[in-house]
Length: 68
Image (cartoon, rainbow, N blue to C red; front, top):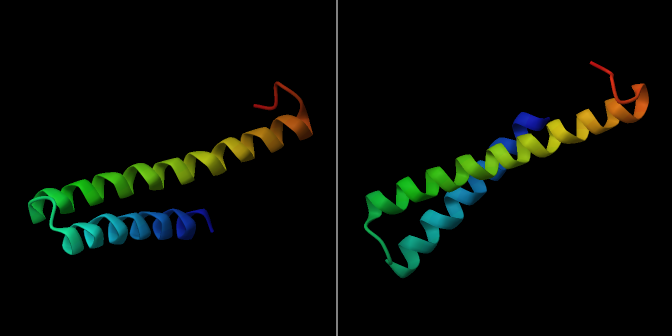
């Protein structure tokens, strides 16, 4: 499920950034695609990190501070 949400966020950001560049033609298309993929990657990592931190918090809450 995390993979699906991460990939959906990744794709949404790519479409948003690349689509806005297509509409307003602000940047070189190659630079815009690179920017879109980079921004998508960062958003995907942020979504993944959110779920990892949430899982760690639940484990800490269930088993205490030293659950590892």
